Amino acid sequence: MTDPVMDMPRTEAAVKWGCVAAPFVIILLVVLYANDMLTFTNPADPNQQYADRAMASARDSMLDPTAVKFKDLTVSAKARCMYGQILGKNAMGAYTGYRDFVWTNGQTLVSTADQTSPLSTAGDIDTVTKYFKARTDCISAMPTDPGSLPLTIPEA
Image 1 (cartoon, one colour):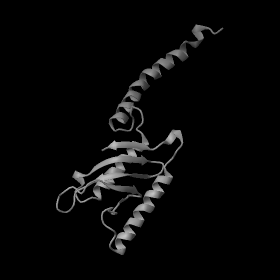
Image 2 (cartoon, one colour):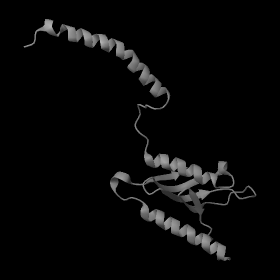
Image 3 (spheres, helix red, strand yellow):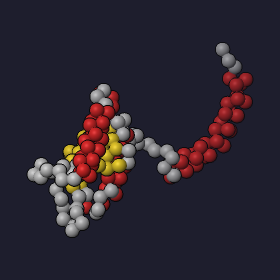
Image 4 (cartoon, helix red, strand yellow):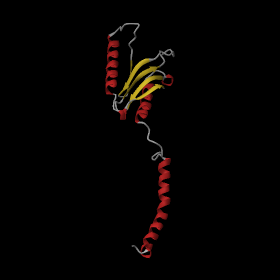
C-alpha cells in the first residue's frame, strides 16, 4: 500500500502542470478548428468529394458552365471516373437535350452519336470511338466490393 503523504509532491506537480498546460491545449484546439485543420464531424464520403470535383470540371468544359445539369450519374473515386447524362447549352443559348458523357482523367467526353442521323465524317468516328472506349474503361473499372461501391446521383 502507498503512503498518501509520500505521493503528495507528485500529485501537486501533476495538478500544477495540468493547470499550466490546459489553457495552451485549449488555445491550440481552437486555432486548429478555426483554420479547418480539425473538425468534429464525420469524414466526407470520398465518392461525394470526387463527384463534386468531377462535376465542376465537366461544367467548365461546356459552353455555359452555369447552365449545366446532370442526370443518372455514377461516380467512383476508386475508379477515378464518372459517367451519366449531361445537359448543356449550344452556341445559340438553347439547351441541346441530355447526352451521354463520361468524365475521366480531367477530360469530359460527350457522346456525339445521334440515332437519327448517321455519322458523316472521319472526325465524328474518332470522337465516338474515343468516347465509347473511355465509357467502357470507366464502367469496367467501377468497384463491385460492398465496401467501395460507386455513388449514384439521380439528378444534380
